[in-house]
Image 1 (cartoon, rainbow, N blue to C red):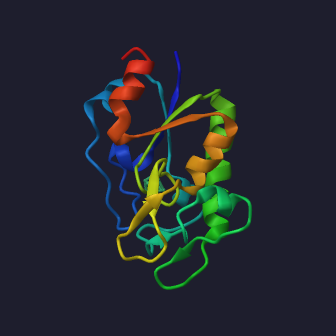
Image 2 (tube, rainbow, N blue to C red):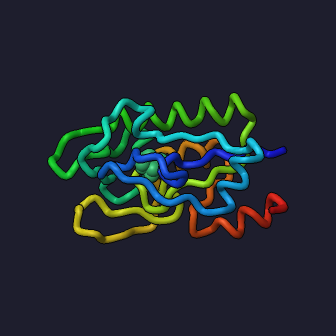
Length: 159
Ligand code: SF4
């Protein structure tokens, strides 16, 4: 049975930068009961505390962070690139360990976002882009979905 890498905050774990989590969607609870989920919070795995300062990538391109061309910084101007990259490496190690081909990650996170991201100005503006972990997983060949694409992933996996 295909395993799925999932953002910990989508399963209610209170790991978000503001100390919150999200009520899990029923499909996720069903997959969890089937033992299909591998759960990760890349930012916590990378060594960041909870709660923590919000962080964004200038331009929103996680692949540029992985390539060493862009930083991740907090709204206070602190460079948090290293823990973000460590978190992505941790997620990569998990997908290799569990032979994972699919991920369901939180939309619009500087680590987990897969389609769009905030633009680095901390003003709520969004751009096309992806988080650092989402970029690393995509480069590894993992198909990354967000919670708004859950039906699509569920259909691919046969429910
Ligand atoms: Fe952790 Fe990703 Fe959720 Fe942010 S979006 S809290 S990095 S699992």
